[in-house]
Length: 78
Image (cartoon, rainbow, N blue to C red; front, side, top):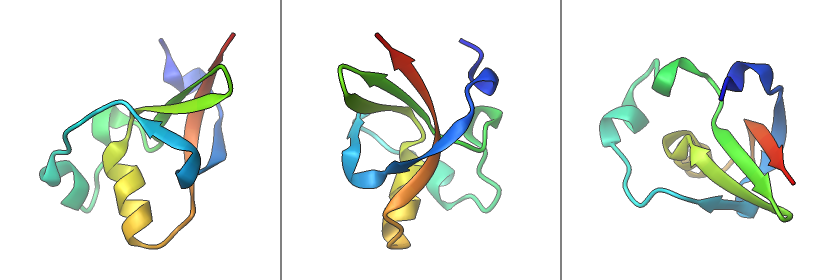
């Protein structure tokens, strides 16, 4: 999947369902963190639900900064 072809959009943190159970603190705390080279988290929308496929560290950072939204690339599956 070429995520660069998916335009980022605003998503609500409270709507995201995480798919990973671990977080690497080095990714979270890095000043220039661009995990896998993309600045935006990757989400998959399936059956009306938003699954956070990649970017857990960015979502956590946004939550810790008390931001309710996040810009993410969302791939819509039917």
